[in-house]
Each structure stands twice: as C-alpha cells, then as structure tokens.
Length: 411
Image (cartoon, rainbow, N blue to C red; front, side, top):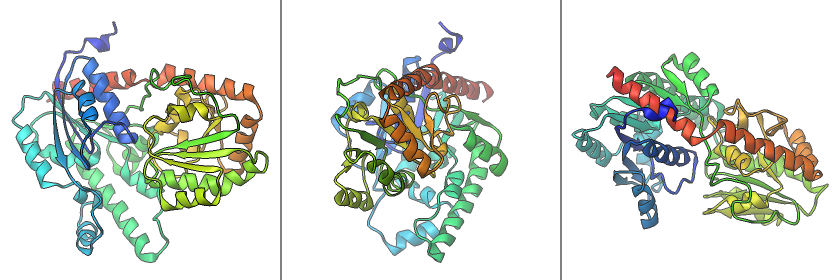
C-alpha cells in the first residue's frame, strides 16, 4: 500500500455547480469521479450543489453510494431573455456568470452548513467561490481552468461592435475576479499547464497545483459493450454541443475538413454525438445525410466502438479535453488539433494520437487512418496504454487528497 493511501480520513464538504450524476460534461465528469475516488480513500463526502431539473431517483441512488449527505438548490440558469436580466449581468462589476450563480437559497444553505463538523471544503468551480466566505473551514478551489484565458481565446459569437465591447468587458471583469478570489483559498487547482502559466503570469497568483483529469479505464475500454465497428467508415466527435468550442469545432470539421474526406470515401459518415446540439448542427445533418447529429446519448461507448477514427478539431477552449481521454481509453485512433491535447503533456504526438494543426492536415491524417487498419490498431493501442499509465482518477484523487490534508495542517 502506498503512503498516499495512509492519509487519515476526513469529512469533506463539496460545493459544486451542478448535480454530478450522470456525468455529462467536463465539470460533472471530474466532480463525479473525484468524489468516488476520495470516498474510496476513506473520506466522508457531503455534497451541496445546484440542479436545473428534477434529479432522477437512479441518479440520487448512485450519488448516495459515495456521499453521506446531499443538499440541492433548484434553479433555472436559462430563463427567458429579459432586459432586466441582461442589464443586471452587464452592468455589474462582477462577471456575468457570477451574478447568475448568486442565488439567495444557496447562500442560506451554505450558512446552515457552516455549523457542520467539516475538516475541509472542496469548492468546485470558481462560480461557487463566493459562497466559501461563510464557511469557517480550510478550503481549496478546484477552478479546472482559467475563465479569463478561455475568454481571451474565445471570440464573441457575432462581430458586431457592441458584442465585441461586451466580450472585452467580461474578460477584464474575470481577470479582476480571479485576482481577487484566488488568494482566499489555500490552493487553486487547475487541469493544464497552459492555464497554470496564464494564472501565474497574467493573474499574478502562484499558489496553484496542476492536477490533470483522469479517465475510468474500466468503464471506457476496448470492447466494453461488444459493439462491432461500423461496416463503412465512421468518424466520431463527442461533447456537450451547446458549449461554444464544441459546436464550433463540429461546424469547422463539417465545413472545412469533411469535404476532403467524402471525395475519397463518399460512403463515410460523420457522427456528432452529444446533448443540446445547436440549430446550425441540425441544419448540417439536414443538408447532408452522411452527417448524423445524435443529441443526448446515455452511453457513448457503442459509438466509440463503431468509430473508425475519433477527431477533436477544437480551435478554442481551455483545460483538458475529457473526450480525447475517453477515445484513447476506448482504443480509438485519435486525430486532434493542437489545442485539443495541450493539457495532455504525457501523451506523445505521432504515437498516442495524431496531431493536425489545420484542416488540410486533419483531412489527410483521417484519410491515412481510414486506409490502414493496422495504423488504426497500432495508434489506438498506444493511446490506450498512455491513459492507463498516466491518466487515472485514482492518481488525481491522491493528489487532491494531499492538498486537502495540507490545507488542514496549515489552518
């Protein structure tokens, strides 16, 4: 047994933005798996979170396996647009999403939890950071990534002058907010060194620790569901499709990469799998029957198993891309843009995945893989071995565990 497993058990309060199960996006995937891994290390976990819709009984039963108690505040984060709501967000000196997550019912809940006998608080996402002020316990902030860096990389949706000004204003507000909030925590956790460099150099905060995401290599494994590969080429991209970097990546691939592939393989299909696809993505599927937009998929593993090639054509965003780790764990050959893998420094370009910095290169790399079953097999096997060696949730949880104990010892 390693020394990291001998750390004494603690009672941990987790504050997070959404119900962790089912793990449907980058935030909930990390939260759910770390809660499980920390509980298995002997800790008692209590959960406080928002939820936007009724939580199914199966979900609460699953979380009851890992949490001693849970406290939920129901909220609608996407109400009908109104001038009042727009002005409230835009005229505030706080970032718009901080205003959105400032909910009186959550403030009251946190004040109640302050009377609990917790050893430490794990604040998950910067959106929950303001609530920590009412908690008299040591605390760390799992920021995942820097939102100010995300906004610097993410252009506004439209090029209108007012929208550009609003985007720049929000970016400045987030920089100020990160500078003010980060020092209130014993440690700030980020998932990639790119975010760490930005926080150290642009935000001026150095009490940070990089803990990459993991992947459940038992759940995501080759042959997990026994689904055969598709008879004709299928190319897969997954993710929450209302998230701008994801739907923009899907649009980019369909418009700039896909035509070069179907000229050689007219029988191929491009599968866009993930919840909340935008109208633009549905329109792609209406115009080209070889493009399939699935919407929400309860179990992505059969789609991974069917795919000949997995692509990640992201051109914006921050942090680690869980979708890439899942594809590698499933033994799928991955073709990725540089930004898609910047949070995976231990994965080797050309051996564990194929790097494609532009549309022409991505089309060429996909075509090379479609034409070589042995190349697909070799790349998929190497990717699988990489995640087994370097990207487990147990490894991530051990590092979080040490941070939590360090916060308690310094309190």
